[in-house]
Image (cartoon, rainbow, N blue to C red; front, top):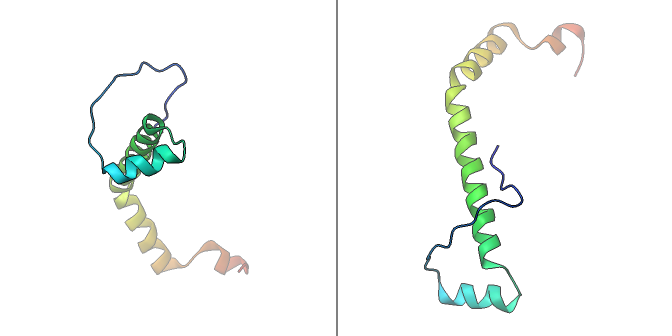
Length: 80
């Protein structure tokens, strides 16, 4: 899981952004650096999840085939 530890080393970077968005965020006392970092963490989590799903795709497909052929255990024991 991607997280940003407290006390992590920071690096100054130059970014470009829509000037109106920057103005509105600053008007709301938003922290541009924190917003960028949060966005990067969310992006990396999404990519890790996509990678995990792809790595496990065959297991999911195998499980789905098993359920199609045999049903779910709860059907056999009378659970909904």
